[in-house]
Amino acid sequence: MNEVYRQATLDDAEQVLGVIRRAYRSIGELKIEFAAVHADLEMVRTNIAEHASYVLEIDGTIVATISLRSLPEVTDLPFLYNFAVDPAYANHGVGSKLLSYAEEAVVRGILLSPAVVLATSAKHPWLLPMYERKGYVRFYERELGRDDKLVFLRKNLLPEVRATTG
Image (cartoon, rainbow, N blue to C red):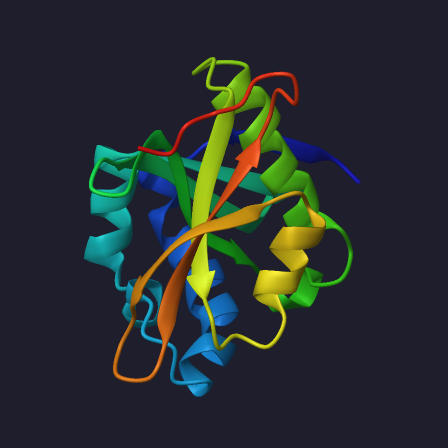
């Protein structure tokens, strides 16, 4: 099994869209209002062109994706979003591997940031506890749709450094 972690290119847009659509199908069924639930090719292309988007390929097939951008209205730390794992690869550690790559190689290694932020739905049945098990801590919430909250979580990547969120 050959694993490759790399930044996505515009040539990857269709494969990335497929991963996002398959991964976010269950999120849509939960009536969670993430933009990625309604992803289309133009949205994916724009994201790849304007922000840093990363993929994990296994044997030449993109099986997971995650993006990185700034979100100054919430934090001065790098913000991870559009995290998606093809359901065919769920529960095989693929998501954990790509998330660790984004945290360690990109956020800490390239951006030299002491911490990172991501967000998820308060009503998702397992994402919040999963991120908390991975060392993320809640620090901010805002409305997400009519009956949900978007919960922002921060993870310190350099335990000896206390990162600020604002």
